[in-house]
Image (cartoon, rainbow, N blue to C red; front, top):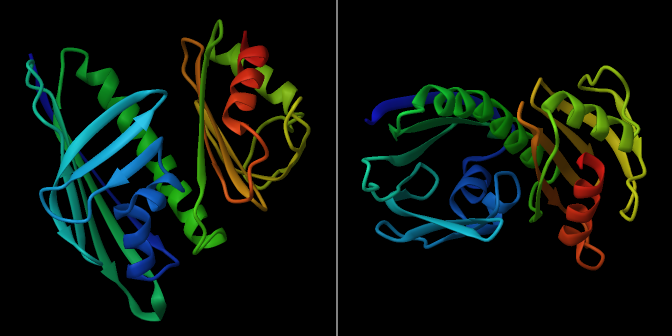
Length: 244
């Protein structure tokens, strides 16, 4: 049985409508703050695709109005599930922009848990978008993805905090001077922290760590410097060794 849902959010961004459009409606822009590696065909009826961990998901672009509106919709699965996204851009005086996001569709039998996860995740993603536009405007991020399984969410969080020598408790604004084994140092500050995720901003990257109660741990990083070697594989090895 499918169940309809809709999540609507609004955020004020210190960026022009054109800058926001580049961030939400182009592949390199989406790479710089959201999830996975993205491709966007720049016209209505085109394809918007996201690849995460070798899995590719595609949606059809249902609205493409540069600087104003961008929308996509996935195909309807055999069980009736689909996802639709709409971004509405409104410029304000002083060069700022209000972005309204509507995420809707149909969820399956476990819709409540999935809906709750989506509802909790969107404020974080929009915060990351704001961090990107504020601190890395005009730059393109290289996405880094890694996933590993730990025994529980609490144990994973403790292991991550220890391996990154993070302050306790994790609070936004706290300084970070991490030295992850086999990786470049992370000198910056915590810019987001809740029960399931935290994010560190450095001078050349946004580093996010998500841990579910089950122990499943996912990293979505966005690097704005020049990565050294196979950074994604190095982070994957580090995460696996840390949470195992």
